[in-house]
View 1: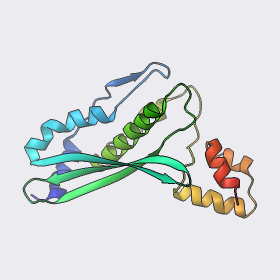
View 2: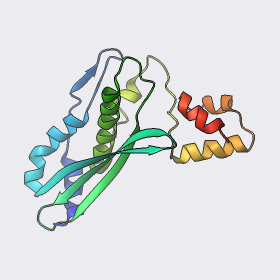
View 3: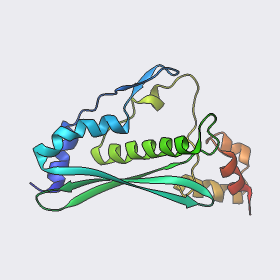
Length: 178
């Protein structure tokens, strides 16, 4: 069986319990740790191993975590991977910098694993979070960021952008600095 065939079987077989509870929003969600715990028994069955690497990077003065989740075939040596990133929220109230970095790390790790394993998060916390409507966060280096920058250069206003995206102070500075 090839690595892609093994990965397909794992994706179809894997069920990850939402083992965490957000008391403020009153919803359940799964963490990176929940995903890692669920794949441990499957690794032996399909003779694969899952690993994650993380790198602290910076773009335009904004620090972010890049997580790469790997599935490596112990029989063939083949490897497949998925990448996810998360901006470190420098404005997070009540958190020290290690907590902010850890939060971004957990988020990026969860989505790198989720993408590799095709875990559908449409019914996760963001979709069930009804205490207020949340706009997508505009992040440096994304296609959305490039489109917004072009739109602003072509006459759109920052107020129009804020109707579609959550814009942090740092992102606003990057967008308005020529």
